[in-house]
Image (cartoon, rainbow, N blue to C red; front, side):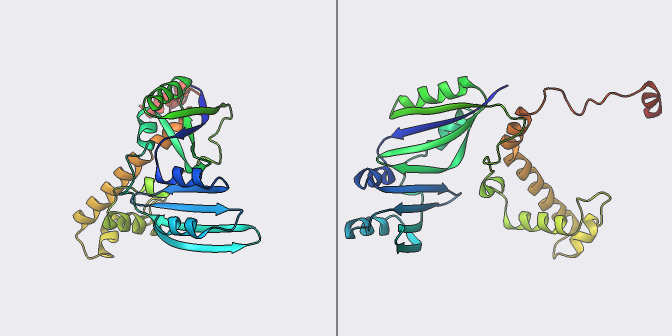
Length: 245
């Protein structure tokens, strides 16, 4: 199986795209989180009052600065005013999205990792059905490891975990439950909390299950870049097999 990194740009009606088209020297970088978006907006030119007003309408300003290098602002906005993200359509075609999305001169720029060329072709065909799209590059990944730039978003790894499940997982990790040999037991862990042993174990097992499920797509990415042999199928000598029996 071959991996590919594809860069595409898309044009359709979107608030961020419209602003980038109206202000050609503006660049918007978007990092989607579970319940909001963080936007980094930069411009080499001094922003006009009209632009500042449009930026204020995007969400809450977290940082703003202007100097000889230009204008820079970071905002946080909710997802309620945006249409269904095309990132969901990436996943439908086995393509992994890499943050950030970049908006410039009326185009949205995306980078995805695909597991084969057919996935990219299927994705492009899907997107072309309702918007203008261009494939800028498609590069095979021939290295034997995942590129260092392919980072798993933390919010996605811990998606759907409750606060109690995260707390149970953190306690087990910090007190050596996952070390070999283990430095603590479920009973000892539960005694450090205000819940029964069975309740604590339930929180911990659910946290483990959700975390591994969320990491599944990244695990597939890692295994796709390794050798085809199964590392669990270790050759043994007849003497070792007899001892195992």
